Image 1 (cartoon, rainbow, N blue to C red):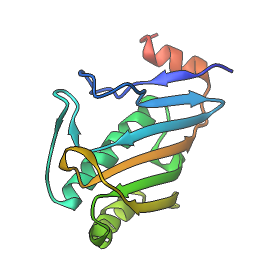
Image 2 (image 1 turned 180 degrees about the horizontal axis):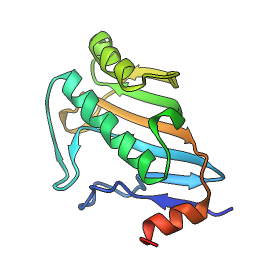
Image 3 (image 1 turned 180 degrees about the vertical axis):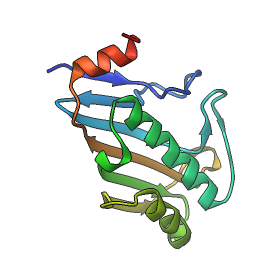
Length: 139
């Protein structure tokens, strides 16, 4: 089966040489997302809670664009610029996944542009490529 690119529905500017998501064999791989205004590409700085909510909303939109939901996410990798923000970020993260929480790795990392968080995800979807094609082409 070939790869299918999944685009963020709100993204109107380039933010780098990567795909927001790649779907192959029912698996969706979501690239690292951060607290960006995707219409301008500008970073939206805020508290760790605000940046976590915005970042997770980007992940959610990409998964939904592929025909899935947050319940389909099985793994997240989270990079925090300051591991001391863990408890505050974790509270927002936990509220975002009301059902079974995805497996997760959280590490402290040096992040660009002063962002506090970056999250990538893997989801197992229950849809077929034809559904994606129809959605992307408004059929």
